[in-house]
Image (cartoon, rainbow, N blue to C red; front, side, top):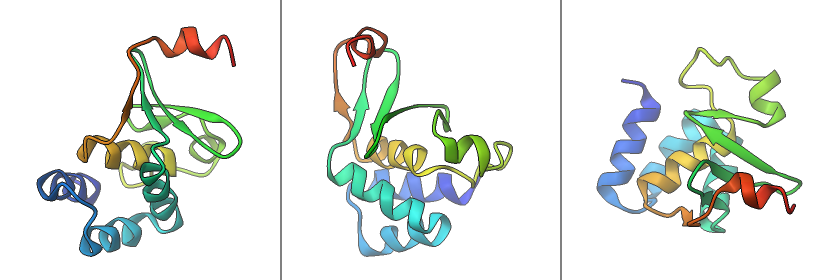
Amino acid sequence: MTSVDEWERALAREGDLTPDLVERITGIHGNRGRRAIEAVGEQRVKEYRDFTVVVGHEAEYVVENDGCTCKDAEYNLDSTDPEQLCWHAVAVRIARALDATDEHDMWYSDVHEFL
């Protein structure tokens, strides 16, 4: 079990971002953790039928199994290390643990065509 799994389970148990959990998340993920918490608070984690999408300030990023379409995940992180997650993937884990994803009963692939 990774420390990411540990804070995620603790967050699901608590049901809220307590100061201790915020400290644990930011202790592991630093600024990525802070940005993720901000995105969840602003309801920018969208759950579609086919994908989970995090709305960034410049684009939308598809997150699947802790993998993300952002440049940070592609160039800066070791995909074999479960502790190294971009802020979009951290946001998805936080939002799911808190049941705070913005649910959309539609296919993102259909919506994305209009963007």
